Image (cartoon, rainbow, N blue to C red; front, side):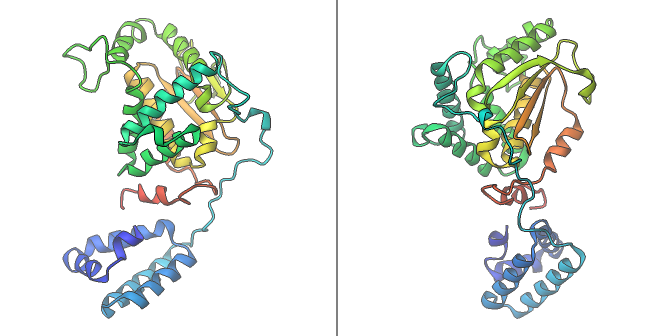
Length: 322
C-alpha cells in the first residue's frame, strides 16, 4: 500500500483534491503497520522526493497525529512455534508415507499441485516437490484481492479434484460438481452418521502427505462450541506439515481452514470445524461440528508468525480499508 499510494506526490495530491475524505481514510489505514522505523522512512521519503511542499506539510501533520493517537506496533511478529516440538512428529518424505503407501501419496500430491497451478495459470512442472506446492499456495494467496476471493479460489481448487460426473441436474446450484452433489444428496442427507465417518477416515487415509501424521478418535462433545453430531470424529494432526511449511497464519486460514470448512459443509453436506494451534503447529479436524462466526473472527485476528515470508504484509494487504 505504501508504494502504491505515495510513489508520486502529484497523484496523491490529486486524490486529496478530488476526494479528501477518501485520502484521510486511506492514510488512516497505515495505522495497521506503523512502527517508529516506518514513520521515519515515510517522512524521509517525502522530504527527498515530494515536489509539492504543501502536500508534504499536510502529510507530516497527519502522520504526527496518527503517531500521537496510535500506540506504535512492534516490527517483529509475536508468534513463534514452541522450541520443544516433537522431532519425530515432523513429516519426512524419505521416511514417512500415508497408510495407502508412497505411490498414492505421490499421486495425490501431483493432482493437488496441478489443481493449484491451474488456479493461478502456472505450469506445475515449474514447481517441483512439496516446496513447489507451497510456493503455489503462497501465489494463490498473493493473487487474491480480498480474503473472500482467496477462500473462493481455494474452495474451487478443492472442487476441481472431483469429477463432474454423474452430472448434476439443472435444478442444482450453478457451482455444483457432479460427484460432490450426488454424495450430498444420496449419502450426507439420508445417512449423516455414515457420511461423517466415511469422510473422516478418507481424510485420514489420503491427506497425511499434505498435513502430516494424524490419528482418529471419537469427538468429545464437551469441547465443542456448537452441538456436535453423535457420530462425530476428531482427526488430530500433531505437527501440520502445511502450516509449518507455510510459516504464515494468514495462508493457513485463507487457503486451508476457511475454504476446507466451506467445502465440507457446502459441497459435501458434512460440517467440519478446523482448529489449528499456531504454537504447537498441531491441528484438529472436528467432523460433525459446525464452524461458528466466532471461529471466523478469531481466525482473522490471529497474530503473524515471526518467520512469515511477508512479515505481516499479506495481512495488511487484505484489510478491507486498503
